[in-house]
Image 1 (tube, one colour):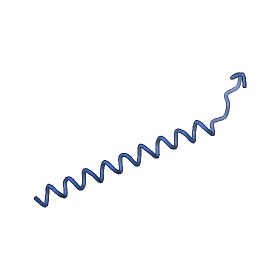
Image 2 (tube, rainbow, N blue to C red):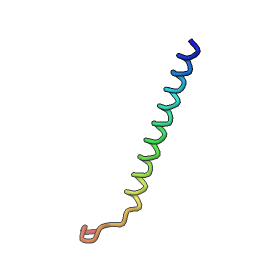
Image 3 (cartoon, one colour):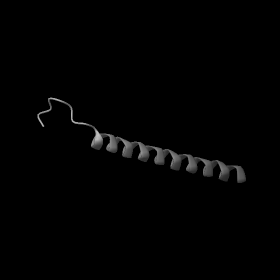
Image 4 (cartoon, rainbow, N blue to C red):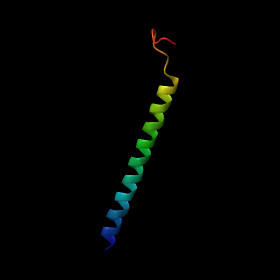
Length: 44
């Protein structure tokens, strides 16, 4: 029973790390889009 608990705890921890990485990636994409220079000839 103790091993099952440890496996479940590790799975939950891994999932939380995965979600944090995804959130960081999404935020980085937003910053990249927001700070990207306007391409020449875009009409702006």
